[in-house]
Structures are given as structure tokens and as C-alpha cells.
Length: 281
Length: 336
Image (tube, rainbow over all chains, first blue to last red; front, side, top):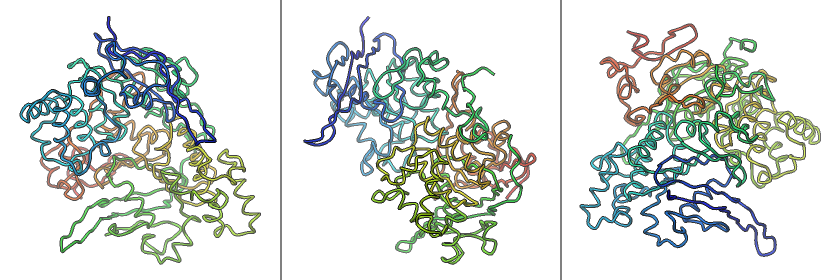
């Protein structure tokens, strides 16, 4: 029973203001959870803007050092890793694929660079092999992507390339920060289903950061709900979202609008209760 | 159900076409962002427009509101408002007529509240800049009116003295709603007004838009790609795909009996809490509007595609009472 990732009372405090009026903002307070090595899972972090979910992601990726507590990857403190060895194990996927890629750079170059830096590919041929393999895992191929620039692809395709780039390094863990919020509605579920396949077929663990409760319910195994840097509720995704116990989780769940919410606002303000989407008919 | 919306249309859009045209070094490019859209918005209703990014929603409302800037041009068709019967589109009316109409009869709620509110001026001054000339009266009278109106969106009158950065995102969006409705316009265009907000705040703001709309009896054209929001807020709903309207009708009817395969997919693919059924994305990608596919623009991705779909543009036909769709599989033999 070894932990792939273990967070122990992780906190992050930012200092704001200048020399004379410094204020301290606690973005993340005492967050603890662990992902098991032998059971790959999609672990969801739910929160609204300002809840600290992106700060948490950045700490797991080693971009920020935690102010308190420790983050351990495969038993070793993240801060003590050599950067390349770390990035070969943990890879990020960002929210907006149009911002993640340089518009003047061909997409395949990102894949080759990742293969050479973190994927132990020693020559171009090996890098191409790795890139093609990763692209096939996301339903694309190197023949389709080679020489293409970001503007030639749609948002959904581009996000697939971003996922393939992460897979090139053959990581153990992927940290995905709002990966589908910029993807067109008709393609969103293909990306979400892709995460499920990566977990089931490749045995990858994924930290899925989102504010969308419906996709979290659909795809994730466990989740935590964060409010102002604090974890207010955690547990198996479907159990928590079907019957949230913390008032904030309930408030979030009740604010989700679904096709079943027809006419919810006809009564004017304050709106009458939106039918809870988890309620049995 | 509330009282049935008045059937007389406030806005009649007929076969509207708006293209982006560029001419550089003798090379002409034309992007048909809105191509032959026809629909009505009735008095006292919220009409929703749904569609993916680059489906032409925003270009459509810009054209309707007369906010045309090159390279965007209105190429054909009409968008007639009941309060401006002499002109077949605001964009074709002279500037002094447009100035009289704007804000008094037609106002907007934009996505980014920070783009509307001047960051260097107090909210009070933004109100004066936008609405004083339309409402008249002394400065004190106007300020009192603005304060009273802010209370309708549950904001304290002290907000008038604040700068935009001192307010939260939800409060700012409520200020822009108050700003857009203080002149009691007949028609309000809301372009993704809640997309940047958190879900709990979003629910509040949507309730606010509905209650003010009901109080004034005005019409709202509400744009969002979020089908959950469309279901909860709108009375009628139009679905856009690649610059064309593919379906429209009463919102509950569309969610119960979607006709167009694209609409069916949009609704079926929405995950819901409490439902573990497998959801699928749609293969392929939305077409480029610079070179759209011939015939029905959805046919390369459509599960029901037939040979006719690749050659003939389907007409928008009233398939069920009050429920139109543009699809050869649903309306055999109806060509545009």
C-alpha cells in the first residue's frame, strides 16, 4: 500500500500589498488527501473562483512551494525532486488550449520536446514514435498533426493535443485544471470520456479540477469540495453529490441548472427552489 | 406557467445575412457568420439563443442591434423593431434616430461588466453618462431614481458612490443589469451575462433578470451556450449551428421533443447529477464559416445524413405547432 501522491496539511499563504500595508491571504488551508498507487482514479477538486483550487494544483505541480505541510510524490517530497524527473511523473493540462500553445509554433514540436526532455527519447525517430503513440491514445495521429499550427485546429482537437503532449512523458499523474470549460459543448463529453479511458486503459491517476458538478458526478471516483481554501466535504463522488451534507455543498448542488429546471425563475426573485437535479422523479 | 406572452412581435428578423468581408491586395474573403436567419421575439418573453462558440450568436445580435463595424456587413434581410417601424434594421437608420432609440428602447447587458463600467468613474457617474439624457429631470431627481432602481436588484444605494473595482463580480453584473433597465426599455439584449460568474451568483443574477423582465413586461434576447441556463430561464429557444438557426420553439417543448439531430445531441450529451448513463461527444468539429459545407451545414457530423443533405439547404419549417426545424430527415422534401 504505497501512496502515489500524499498531501499532508498543505497550506499556502500569499503576502499582498507593499512594504507598509502587507496583508496575508490564506489561499489554501490544511488540505490533506492521498491517491493510492494501485488504484488509479479520477480525483476531483470542486470549487468556485477564489476557493484555492488552482493554487492547490500549482502546488501539486511544484510551481508553488507550500507554506506549510508537505506534498509527497511516490514517497519523496516534491520540493526535493530534480525537476526533469518530477515532470516525467506529473504532467499538467491547462484550461485554455489556445493560450497553452504558442500560435507561431507547430504543434508537433511540443510533442517532440516533451518526448526528448521527459520521455527519454534520444533521437527524432524515437520522439516521433512516442508522439504518434500518445496521439493515437487521444484519437488523433501524428500524420494529422505534423506541421499544423494551433489556429488550424478546433478547441476540442487542440485540447486533445494538449492531453497527448502530457501523455508523451508517460506520467503517473495528470493534473487537469478546468480542462473542458473552453471546449465546445458538442465535444466536451468526448474529452471527459477520454479521461475515463486513460484511467481504465493506461492506469493513470487524474486530478480533475472543475466547477462543473455534473461532469464531476459523471466521471470522477472521489472528490473534495473547497470553499475559501478549506475542504468542506470529501468522499466518493456520487455519494457526496447525491446527498451533500455541508451547507455550502448543498448550495452548490442546488445552483446547478439542468434541462429539468424549466421555468425555475418564472416566479421572479427570489427564485423558487430549483428542483434538485439529483432528486428521483 | 406564467401568463402567455403577448403574441405581437417586438422584433421580427427575416432572412438576415451578415458577413465578414475583407479585401486585401485584390483577395476577397467572405465569412458568412449569419446566413439566412428568421425568427420573432414577442412582447413580454425571454427568447434564448444557444449555440457553440463561432456559431454566429454574437454576430447575429450585433447585427440586430446595429453595432456593425467593418469588416462585418449586413448583406441582406431585415431585423425590424416594433418601436422603429420606419426602418427595416437599426443599422440602416440615421445616427440621430439610433441615438434616440438606444438605451430608451433597446439596451444591452454584456458579458464582462468591467467592459461596460468605466473603471475611473464612480457608479453614479456611469448611471448619469448612460441614462440621464433619456430620463431628464434634475441631477438630484435622477440620482434618487438611480438609487431606487438599484434597490430592485438588491443593491444598497451606497453602491452609487463606489468605484467598479470595489464591488464583487456579481454586484458589478447587477449594476450593469440596473443600468440596462433603468430606462425601462422594451427590448434588452443579454449576451452571456452570467458566463463569467460562479454558479451560486449566477442563479441570483438570472433570477434578477427574470423578475425585472416580468415587472417591466419587456422582451429579452438572451444568449448563452449553457443549455441548463436556457432551460431554466427562457420562454422560447432558438438553436444556432454554423451561422444558421436550425430549430426554434417553446423551451420546454424543445427539451421534451427536440427535432433537429444537433439539438438532440446537445440535450442528450448533458451529464446530470443522479444519472450515470454513458454520454457521448459528437465526432468531427464545427465547420469553418469561410468555407462551410454545401447543403445542410451539419451533415458531415450528422447521424441521420442522407444524400440530399449534402446538396440541398433544408428549409426552416414549422414541423409541430410553434416548433420549427431545418432538417431533411424531419421535414422530407422541404428545401430552402
